[in-house]
Amino acid sequence: MLIGELDDQNGGFRCWIGHSDWKTLALLADYLIQSIYGVSEALQSASLAAKTHREATFSQSHAFKQATREGENPFPLNAQGRRRASTITSSLESCFFHLGQSLDRLAAAVFIIGGFEVNNIVKVDWGKLEEVAADLDQGSGRERYQPAGSTGRAAQEALVIPVRDWLQYGPTDWLEWFRETRNGATHRAAGGKIVVPTTDQRFVRLLYREPLWSEVQSFVYGARPPKTSLWDAFIPAASEDVLDGLVDSTTQLVAAIARTMETCWIARVADPQMIVQHGRQWQDVEPPGAMSNFPGYGTPITIASKNMTLNPLDAQRWNAARVMDDRRADWYV
Image (tube, rainbow, N blue to C red; front, side):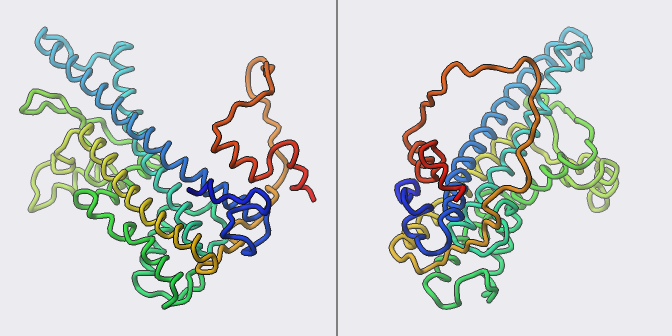
């Protein structure tokens, strides 16, 4: 739908004509389309990571049971055991990373679709979108929104309803827990990898209930009265089931927002002046500084053919952005 609205002559989308200069609008339009592509790609990567995690935990559980039956160490330190354990950890963290990536990319797309004023769209993330949803829910009169009572303001408010109502797509605190777990895995010390046997004859990896607490804090303060057991520091669910659930909940949330984005976009195409596309979302047309001189590693390759086969939609997108050799000179004027 977006690519079909691209303006090959003026830059950006046809419904944006006159809202800013063509270079800024071309950059914003392409960033919007790429962000939406990126959301889909991130969800697929998260789903693959969850599947890999489930397969690896199943393999580990099978190895544990076999070793226990044979009276051997169920936690082998050989290469195969280490590789399996690393696959379980890396796939777990990869799933969290890509789920968070999908929401951050989606946030940028929503900001552009909604025409929210922001000084640099590249720095927008899910947290910024949550702030917008809260502002609009409280009737904030900030300048970044269309005037209160206008059709543009009503479209912006409807656009972010699923952002505010994320709880309906999963169990209690699901989104906050997964985002904190992602941040904890990225920036903080790693906790112990706890694998326990279950009554249904599985060996499962447990996840900490409070991802931003240290391991000792979890054990001490997660088990304070009325809780009494050290095991209360963990979520009573297998890690593979948690990942599958998070992928499903995030996908439902993304789908709901995609529907409100579509509704908002159709309204904007019908009434281009309803929401102004602020050029300040993209501050500088030219990138800061010169291109990196990093040459890579190994022997330099030689590209065998300079002919490029493109998806027709990408070809249309690049043509509208004037990046092909016959029109790229327009950017330097």
